[in-house]
Length: 162
Image 1 (cartoon, helix red, strand yellow):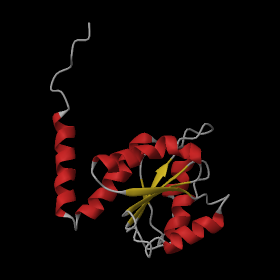
Image 2 (cartoon, one colour):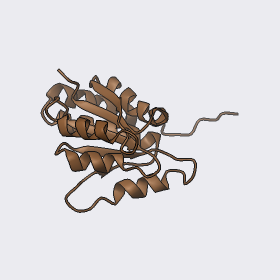
Image 3 (tube, rainbow, N blue to C red):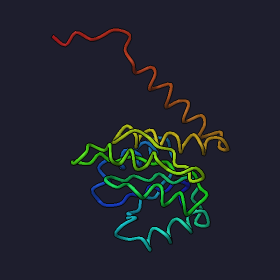
Image 4 (cartoon, rainbow, N blue to C red):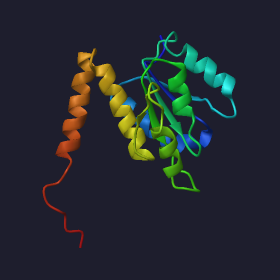
Protein backbone atom coordinates (compact mmCIF):
# COMPACT_ATOMS: atom_id res chain seq x y z
CA UNK A 1 0.00 0.00 0.00
CA UNK A 2 1.11 3.53 -0.74
CA UNK A 3 1.81 5.82 2.20
CA UNK A 4 -1.18 8.02 3.02
CA UNK A 5 0.73 11.29 2.61
CA UNK A 6 2.75 12.48 -0.36
CA UNK A 7 5.32 15.22 0.05
CA UNK A 8 6.14 16.82 -3.28
CA UNK A 9 8.58 19.57 -4.12
CA UNK A 10 9.89 21.29 -7.19
CA UNK A 11 13.58 20.55 -6.74
CA UNK A 12 16.15 18.81 -4.54
CA UNK A 13 16.99 22.12 -2.87
CA UNK A 14 13.44 22.27 -1.45
CA UNK A 15 14.23 19.16 0.64
CA UNK A 16 16.08 21.34 3.18
CA UNK A 17 12.64 22.72 4.11
CA UNK A 18 10.38 19.78 3.30
CA UNK A 19 12.38 17.25 5.33
CA UNK A 20 10.84 18.87 8.40
CA UNK A 21 7.43 17.68 7.24
CA UNK A 22 8.78 14.17 6.74
CA UNK A 23 10.50 14.21 10.15
CA UNK A 24 7.31 15.38 11.88
CA UNK A 25 5.25 12.67 10.20
CA UNK A 26 7.85 10.06 11.17
CA UNK A 27 7.68 11.24 14.80
CA UNK A 28 3.91 10.69 14.66
CA UNK A 29 4.26 7.26 13.06
CA UNK A 30 2.70 8.37 9.77
CA UNK A 31 4.17 7.01 6.56
CA UNK A 32 4.89 9.38 3.71
CA UNK A 33 6.54 9.33 0.31
CA UNK A 34 8.61 12.21 -1.04
CA UNK A 35 8.87 13.07 -4.72
CA UNK A 36 10.45 15.79 -6.84
CA UNK A 37 7.69 16.94 -9.17
CA UNK A 38 8.45 20.30 -10.77
CA UNK A 39 5.54 22.26 -12.21
CA UNK A 40 7.94 23.94 -14.64
CA UNK A 41 10.70 21.45 -15.42
CA UNK A 42 8.73 18.18 -15.24
CA UNK A 43 5.11 19.11 -16.03
CA UNK A 44 4.29 15.66 -17.44
CA UNK A 45 5.51 14.09 -14.18
CA UNK A 46 3.36 16.55 -12.21
CA UNK A 47 0.26 15.76 -14.26
CA UNK A 48 0.77 12.00 -13.96
CA UNK A 49 1.45 12.21 -10.23
CA UNK A 50 -1.47 14.50 -9.34
CA UNK A 51 -3.98 12.78 -11.62
CA UNK A 52 -3.03 9.38 -10.17
CA UNK A 53 -2.48 10.36 -6.53
CA UNK A 54 -5.88 9.26 -5.23
CA UNK A 55 -5.81 5.97 -7.14
CA UNK A 56 -2.30 5.39 -5.78
CA UNK A 57 -3.70 5.53 -2.25
CA UNK A 58 -2.60 8.96 -1.11
CA UNK A 59 -5.03 10.83 1.13
CA UNK A 60 -3.23 14.18 1.51
CA UNK A 61 -0.58 16.01 -0.51
CA UNK A 62 1.94 18.39 1.05
CA UNK A 63 3.49 20.51 -1.71
CA UNK A 64 6.53 22.68 -1.11
CA UNK A 65 7.56 25.25 -3.66
CA UNK A 66 9.77 28.30 -3.93
CA UNK A 67 9.94 31.20 -6.34
CA UNK A 68 6.92 31.20 -8.65
CA UNK A 69 5.54 28.36 -6.48
CA UNK A 70 3.05 26.92 -8.95
CA UNK A 71 3.36 23.33 -7.71
CA UNK A 72 0.75 23.41 -4.90
CA UNK A 73 -1.86 25.14 -7.05
CA UNK A 74 -1.29 22.95 -10.07
CA UNK A 75 -1.47 19.81 -7.92
CA UNK A 76 -4.72 21.07 -6.38
CA UNK A 77 -6.13 21.76 -9.84
CA UNK A 78 -5.45 18.15 -10.87
CA UNK A 79 -6.74 16.22 -7.83
CA UNK A 80 -9.58 16.41 -5.34
CA UNK A 81 -7.26 15.39 -2.50
CA UNK A 82 -6.48 18.04 0.11
CA UNK A 83 -3.30 19.93 -0.78
CA UNK A 84 -1.29 21.87 1.80
CA UNK A 85 1.17 24.34 0.30
CA UNK A 86 4.45 25.20 1.97
CA UNK A 87 6.23 28.30 0.67
CA UNK A 88 9.95 27.56 0.51
CA UNK A 89 12.15 30.51 1.36
CA UNK A 90 13.85 31.95 -1.68
CA UNK A 91 17.05 34.00 -1.78
CA UNK A 92 15.52 36.76 -3.86
CA UNK A 93 12.39 37.63 -1.89
CA UNK A 94 12.77 35.49 1.27
CA UNK A 95 9.74 33.35 0.39
CA UNK A 96 7.22 36.19 0.14
CA UNK A 97 6.95 35.51 -3.59
CA UNK A 98 6.21 31.85 -2.86
CA UNK A 99 3.67 32.71 -0.18
CA UNK A 100 1.79 35.11 -2.47
CA UNK A 101 1.78 32.62 -5.30
CA UNK A 102 0.37 29.80 -3.16
CA UNK A 103 -2.15 31.84 -1.17
CA UNK A 104 -3.74 33.52 -4.22
CA UNK A 105 -5.58 30.52 -5.63
CA UNK A 106 -8.84 31.23 -7.44
CA UNK A 107 -12.12 30.17 -5.89
CA UNK A 108 -12.74 26.50 -6.51
CA UNK A 109 -9.08 25.38 -6.36
CA UNK A 110 -8.26 25.33 -2.64
CA UNK A 111 -4.74 25.07 -1.28
CA UNK A 112 -4.24 25.25 2.47
CA UNK A 113 -1.33 27.67 2.70
CA UNK A 114 1.14 27.48 5.57
CA UNK A 115 3.95 29.68 6.86
CA UNK A 116 7.16 30.17 4.94
CA UNK A 117 9.89 27.61 5.58
CA UNK A 118 10.45 25.12 8.39
CA UNK A 119 7.45 26.18 10.50
CA UNK A 120 5.17 25.78 7.49
CA UNK A 121 6.55 22.32 6.71
CA UNK A 122 6.04 21.15 10.30
CA UNK A 123 2.53 22.60 10.45
CA UNK A 124 1.62 21.06 7.08
CA UNK A 125 2.59 17.66 8.50
CA UNK A 126 0.54 18.29 11.64
CA UNK A 127 -2.49 19.32 9.57
CA UNK A 128 -2.14 16.29 7.31
CA UNK A 129 -1.90 14.04 10.37
CA UNK A 130 -4.97 15.73 11.87
CA UNK A 131 -6.93 14.97 8.68
CA UNK A 132 -5.93 11.30 8.88
CA UNK A 133 -6.59 11.21 12.63
CA UNK A 134 -10.28 11.89 12.01
CA UNK A 135 -10.63 8.24 11.02
CA UNK A 136 -7.67 6.76 12.91
CA UNK A 137 -8.08 6.72 16.73
CA UNK A 138 -4.50 5.51 17.31
CA UNK A 139 -3.10 8.41 15.28
CA UNK A 140 -5.44 10.77 17.10
CA UNK A 141 -3.92 9.58 20.39
CA UNK A 142 -0.35 10.01 19.07
CA UNK A 143 -1.16 13.51 17.82
CA UNK A 144 -2.68 14.45 21.19
CA UNK A 145 0.42 13.12 22.96
CA UNK A 146 2.71 15.10 20.62
CA UNK A 147 0.78 18.30 21.32
CA UNK A 148 0.78 17.62 25.08
CA UNK A 149 4.56 17.11 25.05
CA UNK A 150 4.98 20.35 23.11
CA UNK A 151 2.90 22.21 25.70
CA UNK A 152 4.78 20.66 28.60
CA UNK A 153 8.11 21.65 27.04
CA UNK A 154 7.31 25.34 27.46
CA UNK A 155 9.01 26.61 30.60
CA UNK A 156 7.06 28.74 33.06
CA UNK A 157 10.07 30.92 33.85
CA UNK A 158 13.11 31.97 31.86
CA UNK A 159 16.35 30.20 32.68
CA UNK A 160 19.32 32.20 33.87
CA UNK A 161 22.07 31.38 31.36
CA UNK A 162 24.72 33.47 33.16
